Amino acid sequence: MGDNENRKVYEPRIVKNYREMIEYSVKNYADKVAYKYKKNGDLKHVEYVEKTYEQVGKDIKAFATELLNKGLENRKIVVIGNNRYEWCISYLAVTSANMIIVPLDKALPNNEIENLVIRSEAEVAIFDKKYIEVMKKLKKDTNANLKMLICMDNIKDNDVENFSQLLQKGKELLKNDDNRYEKVKVNPEKMSIMLFTSGTTNVPKAVMLSQKNICANLSDFASWVKLYPTDTLLSFLPIHHTFECTVTFLYGFYSGCTVAFCDGLKYIQKNLVEYKVSVFVAVPLVLETMYKKVQKAIHDQGKEKLISTMVKISNSLLKCKIDLRKVIFKKILDNLGGNIRLVLYGAAPMNKETIVGFNNFGIELVQGYGLTETSPVIAAETDKEKKPGAVGLALPSLNVKIDHPDENGEGEILVKGPSVMIGYYHNDEENQKAFIDGWFRTGDYGYITEDGFIYVTGRKKDIIVLQNGKNVYPQEIEFLINKLPYVTESLVYQRGKDKTDTMLCAKIVYDKDLIKEKLGEKTEKEYQELIWEKIKEINQQLPVFKHIKKISITTEPLIKTTTQKVKRYEELKRV
Image (tube, rainbow, N blue to C red):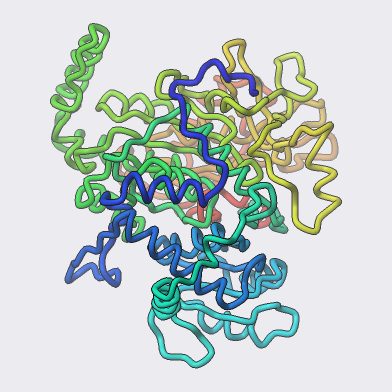
């Protein structure tokens, strides 16, 4: 039992493995639409495809049966590609038939794909057609273990099997009473998912997760935040990433929701409208961009005063348990699809103004915090308890504590519980570093308040230690800089001023259109001077040792992972 067992908001359904989860949803939500997407991704001549839970169940069983027929039980299978139906079926078929899935980042360059496929020791790869050449090259590579290639798209190539044909073969086997899928016994405690860490550090580590790990996380999360079979989720974060995979894909399936696949980042708003999305999982950067667009539309229409008044009236009514936000702000909400009730987000801190702003319009924002190694959610706000600025409460079955807290109660966040990984694959050295007396070291610094809310102040490896021994968390200062309306992101780093001291510098990325709108047409030098004035104001809010002494400005985005985390080590090489 964890620290917060008694704070459960809902009594969740406990699932022990994927097979149990699939069988429950297929039986109980049989006629409900599980997946909705555009046929062949065609955005011009739109034809929608809908797959019910019953159809999904049949496809999982058929595809798994054919994989078992090819003698792949216990083997590792790579999957790489866009968020799509075939990806989901591959993942669920592989894992529920006692094979190991290795989801890879679709944005990786070919040399990294080659490296990770070799390291994973995978014998099969399932992929989008854009990866055909790299996979064919790997199949010939004697360092790789790859023996079979499966393309999610229909192509003609003698070296490559088609997903649709294998699915059909599986259906034929089932018609002839093939029952090997039923006979397979899945051990929920052994490695079922191998995930490579996202690469904000130099060498990705291979994380071993079991079905017990992820199922514990699903049941835990279900006791904090509820999804309903009437909900439609938009899947747009990369599905290989454990946050999107666990929360949108698996928790959506567990809850009987419909998952719609996004056509791409620039189509989010359009997809929210056309699929009538009620819940989506996002990162702060996406939400802050959306909120800035809403604010800009209000400003352009000269309605700032009116909206401000309506927010005050609406919030007064809320105190009397009268919620008219969906009525009062209907026009704003219609631009976001008209159906959004809940946004789940994680990966970075969020501007408080954005959280409060969305909430004022009737959209609940729930923050989560976790790592690949923890399946992933460690803490989250609940449907009842929220605190802007905190990452939430530790999930019911997890114990969380601070290691060697300083005078402010800050130290490394440690976690113990059923969703903590088995360990890193073939990496004893990192496994020894990762655990202390059975507790997993997150590498994040933070503190826990008396009421149990966890605050994350920064990554341990990113902390800047000054000559006087003071610790500076760059994220804390970046958060303040990013609140400037025309700043999209920033990077705080240290540079040696002389032999005895270091100074803090900031690289600031600004939005050309927004800065022009706020400050008028200027040269870059003039913009730099005006931003510097604002940095001086931020310095006044901070102790002297945290003052920024030098800035550089640019319109070029910082280098990021596919989940929009800044690759600090690569950026630091550039600056």
